[in-house]
Length: 181
Image (cartoon, rainbow, N blue to C red; front, side, top):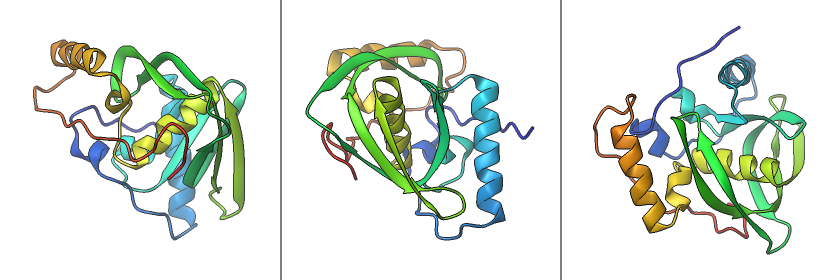
């Protein structure tokens, strides 16, 4: 097992857009395995490479009976339906807030061997695909919270035992609820 430490909120790597993967090689396969092992060890629904300090567009997911990974993913919503529900993040341990996401999405990308992959997601899987793709753009789900909830979230983060006291950044997501990258 190759469980790696997860970068926590406030780490600049989480706010830096990840680079496209161009080499589908042994190092990429190792990264996917590290992401998978770490995600499973921590009980996460998904984990993006920047959360391990790696600035590449790769994530793993395991939720709602679906599991896999995507390299260089994009997503689009299937319709205008949204969902409002609890969301958390392994980089913000133990804290959860309600967040709006598209309810039905299709994510496209490649697997670690460079073969095309398409994943259709609804509800939790759709939330996960959007959440992890946001990580690859340097966006965290806190950026999607309404102002009042975000203020409460920041207070909870500052009071958490894991936060180092730095001034975290809030960014605007480049993805609308109804479109991909």
